[in-house]
Image (cartoon, rainbow, N blue to C red; front, side, top):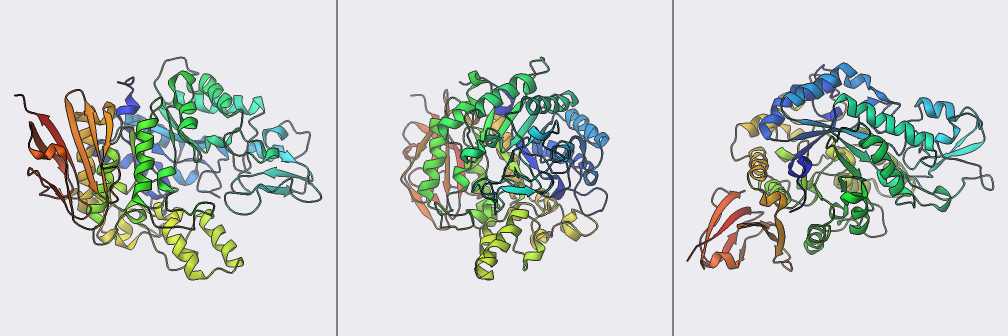
Length: 553
C-alpha cells in the first residue's frame, strides 16, 4: 500500500467564487457566500475546498490576473472575510486550498507597473522583455487567448511576453528575486492556515521564450523543487499540505517527475488527456470530433496502471471545461442516469476525486443566444478571430456550446427561485434556465437525486479503503460501450461497471456465475440493478458497484 496521506483519502470540492453564492446582492459570488454554505459541504462529506483566485485583480481573466497576492478582491470581500472562512471551515473539519497563479501577474500588479517604467528599473527583470526583430515581434510565439504572445510597449520600445492575455504579463522565473518573492507569498498563506495550493499552469514557469518553449522547460523541476523547499515546506512544521499542479502537457513520465515523493515537488497534477479526446489532433480545442470510448478507456486505464510512483487526480469538470454530462454524456433524456454514471466511474478509481461546483447536481452546458451574453475572454477572442476568418456564426456558436469555458461558469443553481437562488439582483453571467428543474433544494429532497448519489459515493470511499489504496484491475477492456474494473484490497473485492451509452446491454461477468461467491449491490444509479446470477443486464447509462465475497468451502 502507498503511504497514507490525508489528501489521498480526501474528496476535494472546487469553488468558482464569482459564480457560487452571492451574499450581498451585487450579482457576484463572494467569500461570505462560501462561508454561508459550509454546512452544505459538511453534509455532503467533502474534506477540502479549492477556491479559484480571490485576490485583488482587475478581472481581465476572472481573477487569474492578480494585482496583489496579499489582499482580497473588493467584489469578493475582505481579508477578514477570508480569515473567517478559514476558521469556520476548520471548525467543520474542512481544509481550504488556495489557487495560486505564479506564471504571470496582472499588468496592474506593482511589479509590472515598475517594470515597464524603464529598462533600468529594479523590477524590469521580473518579466520577460525583448527587443523587436525587424521591427516586429521577437518571434512567432502565440497566445493561448489568440494572437501573438508579445505585446509592444511604446515607453521603452520593447515587447513583453504574455502567454495568455496581454494584461497577464509572464513572470521571469530565471530571476532569483522573483522566486524568493513567490516563496514569501506561499509562506504568508500557509501562516494564515490554508492547507494546500492548486498551481495554475505551473508547467509554464520554466519557459524558454527565445526557443519558443512554453511548457516543460529544462529548469522547470528545479524551480518547483526550490519552491517546495523555500515555500511549501518553509514553515518547518512538517505540515502535510497538498499541492496540485495544472499541467496540460503532462504524460506519465512528466507526471512522475512532479509527483514521485523523493523528488519533493508536488502532491499531484491535473493532466487533461481524458477530457481532450473529442478534439481533432493538430487543431484548436474548438474543432471537435465524436468521442471514441475505447480511447477514453485506454487513457483512464493507462493512468491508473502506469502512474504508480505518484498519485492521480480524478476529475471530469472544472472552471476551464464544459460540463461532463453535456460533454461526454446525455444531458436530456438520461441526464440523471448519465450524471450518476460519470460519478460512479470516477469515484471508484484510484486517486483523489475532485468535484466542481454544480457537478454534484448534474448541471449542464449553457446555450446563450448571442455572443454578447458570454463573458469568457478566450471565447470572445475566438469568436472575433473566426468571424474575421470567414467562419459562419452558426458554426462558431456550435463550438462555443460544446467547449466554452462559460459552460462551467454559470451561477450555481441552489433553488428553483429567482436566478436559481444565486443572487437577488442581475447575475454577472446568465443563470442556466434549467435551474427550475436542476437545483440543490429539489435534489436534497429527493433521495434518488444526483446529489444524494454523490453523497453515497463520498461515504463509500471513507468506509472502504479498497477505493483509496486498493489495486485497480480493468476488465472488458475491448468493449466499446462498457467501462468496468475491479478494486481489490486484501480480501475485499469490488466490481465497478458502467454502461456509457443509451442502449441495453447484457454482459457476462465471471463473478456472476454463482461459483463460490456472494454478490452484493453497494450502489447503483437505478433502483433495481441486477444481482441475479448469470448474465448482468445493464440499461441505458446504468452503473453499479458490487461487492464480491468468496464463500468459504
